[in-house]
Amino acid sequence: MNTRSQGMSASIQHSVEQALAGLAPPGLSAGCRHILAGDEQYILPAESASMATREPGARAATGAGRHVAHELLRRLGCVNPAILRGRSGSPIWPAGIVGSIAHDDTMAVAVVARSGALRSVGVDIEPALPLPDDLWAVVAAPEDRLGDLDPKLGGRILFAAKEAAYKASFPLDGRVLGFEDIAIDFEKGEAVTSPGRRLAVRFATSPCILALACAAVER
Image 1 (cartoon, rainbow, N blue to C red):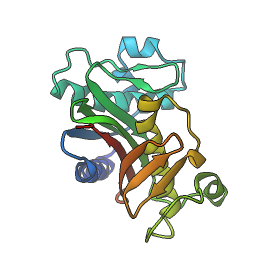
Image 2: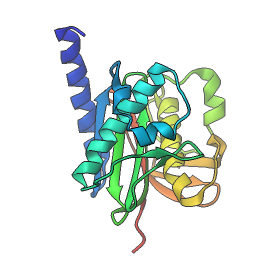
Image 3: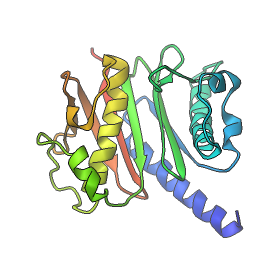
């Protein structure tokens, strides 16, 4: 990677970090990393043993996401930051921790919190590009309320919000959901799943589309 490319990558990473910080509620730590060849080195041995063999590009993205998550966990005092992959494919977080990891083709993001701060959290990252027309009918549901979303990016934002909401709902309900099972109301900033789970939803659109969904701790 040449100096100019490195500078652009650092600038984008900084912008993503700022966008994540703007979305994060109190108690949630967030980070990101530009995915590089060789990032599979950050997959810990215990994590690798829990994962099916994947092609190098996918393992590099996984390693980048795990690397970010490991650093966030260490800041919370976790001695063993290994994040195994469960049978469902979702991450198994250390005891007392909730979190989520996501990546697109170039950037990996992770968010973590103590379970005393949030019950669950989900994150997604997508390119700031229109959603392909053939996916719109799959993602959208009659119950969705898009409000005044950018007409060009609205579909992609909806996609990201439902992905984040699913990641946040699964640890709580153990239910596999389709897009039709999640209704997003952007005016209220809320997602409601078919089992009745309500989640707060936030998003950003620059430099990429980021969506965050979380369940508050019941007081």
